[in-house]
Length: 483
View 1 (cartoon, rainbow, N blue to C red):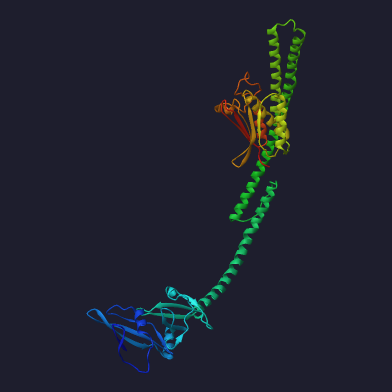
View 2: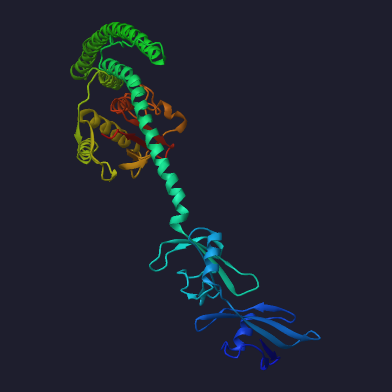
């Protein structure tokens, strides 16, 4: 036992003169940081093969520290005591005490190597595992000792702790294997009992899908599968009857359609021959009047014969348009690859010859190739470009733009002009036969061109629409489905 003054200098020392802990008292007191009227237990210090720790109390007078009493105690227990204590803890358990800074650990008989944990203070709130050199893995828990600078470490053999769990797991694996084998056997028996009727149902359904509506299922059971087989057989009979009725109706409708087509062909033939003959007669006799009696006709008579001839020619064009429109419904389309840029330039060159002297400005963008019927698609371009030329001809600087645009993930062709345009409220009449948004005295035409264009686009599976504003031009958009 040592008594120190307030300057931490030794005043009195009592004890075994052969044992002295050579540790700086300043170091011991600094680590404890004791307030007045208090005491504490310091770190464990090693002196040769023995370990000592200090118990320090402050000496106060009138609440002022005037000195310190330090008593050094030996940490030592016999091997028999340690073994008995380990048996109380559990099989193969080990108890260690060490300083909180981890620099010194002991099993209470001798110093030992510290546990291989980087920061045991951080791990003191949870269990952790490790292996000491040449030793089996352990599971450990460390806790600080209250009012000291010590840590208490308790180790249990991992093998001992997990032995019961492993034995239980082995039994579980055996039992699970037996249950799995029994389950597989039962499942196989049940699946055989279920899959065989299902195979018959599948085979009958496949036969019916191939067109044989007389297929049936022979499943003599009174459970749900039997009811399903009975329902399937009833359905097969109903489908066979419905199929026979449908075939009969198709034959009847086909016969009716053939009759209507024959009547339509006869009507078309009548229009083509019976109406053209009178028109040719009118044009012929009007030409005779103009050529043989020109000296006997005054100016008014000449004007009248010119009007008769012009209207008769228009009537002929109208008949041609009606015939083309009616034939389009029955005409088959043959799709090939169309080089759109080449086709459009050919159409423009042809129409440019017919409109020689026009100061038209053209803005032609690159156009993608498409798959379609070449003759009818050419008719679409001819009609739409002709309309653009016709309705923009009265502008000082007529301009026509042709290109493509992407809308809703699809490619659309468009033709824009800066001509007379049209009133948007009447745009539903654009593609109707004989529906004109401009008078015949303003612009010539039969009123069939846009209707024919719509029929061609629809027959190809596409869509078409128009946009416009009066005196500000018009735009027509159409698309063809991608192959």
